[in-house]
Length: 167
Image (tube, rainbow, N blue to C red; front, side, top):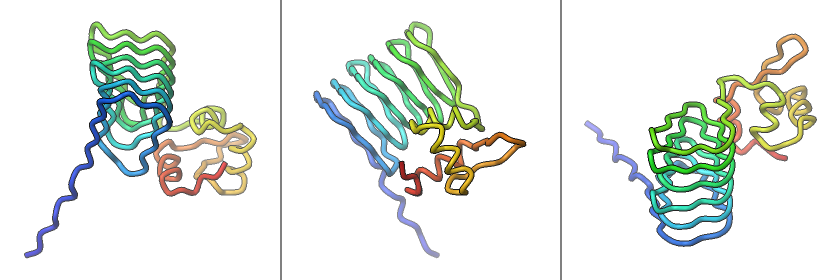
């Protein structure tokens, strides 16, 4: 009988003041307890501790906030604002859980399973013409419905993770 060794969970607990951009291609459990200025692009779980302040845009799978965040947040799986959370900025979650006492100052646009061309351009932060060109040439997973393109979010996320995106 063969046993598979369980992969060790990657955990990063940051309690410092940092500036810059952090990108994680592999899933990681990241917890920020200090001050961070810059953009975060994570996979896996991102926790912003109750003593943390983050100024910048965040893209991640599951994002749990107890502290302060100022910037745009895109949560591909779930965004949780705990009772001590203070968020200033627009949020784009697939699922959203806001505890009583949490503060959200900004707009919320729920991510759906499918996006149109304009929504995808905002999601990928590229111009609309690039999206239309990629869809027409088959470079991006897309569905044609009449004269309009539709994009499945999960297929787009897999396409991004495969490294096939080039701006």
